[in-house]
Length: 147
Image 1 (cartoon, rainbow, N blue to C red):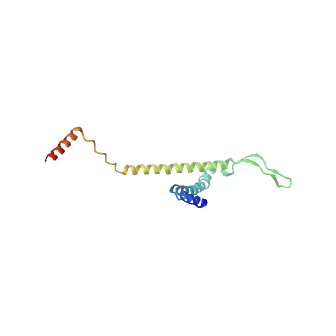
Image 2: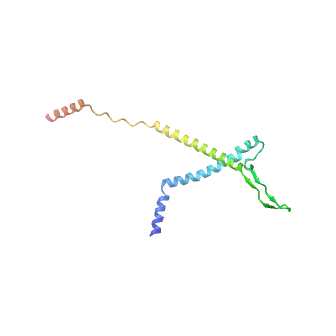
Image 3: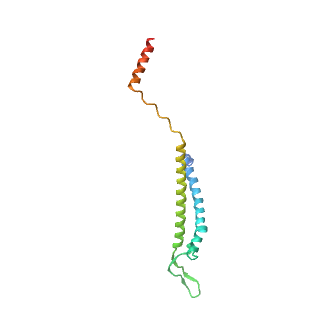
C-alpha cells in the first residue's frame, strides 16, 4: 500500500505541466549548449586564434612543472599544467549562451507587450449616479406606483 501511494504521488508530480515544461527546457537547453559550443569552437575561435598568431585556445596552458622523463624516454610523471585556454573557450561559450538567452527573452517580452497593446481595453464601469439622478429615479418610481 505504501509503494502504490508513493508511485501515484510521483506520477501526479511528474505529469504536472511545470515539470514537463522544465524537462523540455533542460533537453532543449542541452542541445542549444552543444550548438553554441560548436559555434564557438569551430567558427568563432579559429579566426580569433588566427588573428593572435595561429593559436588554438584549447591548447593554451601554463606548465607549472615539466613532465619527468626516464632515460629510456618513457614518461615517469605527467606535467602539471594550468589549462587556461580551455577556461577561455568555456567562458566564450557561456557569454554567447547568456547573450542568446537574453535576446530570446527580450524578444518574448516585446511580443507579449505587443499582444497586450492589441487587446482592447475593458470598458470602464459606468459612473455612479449623482444625487439628482437618484432623486429623479425615486420620483419616477413613485409616480409609476400611483398610476
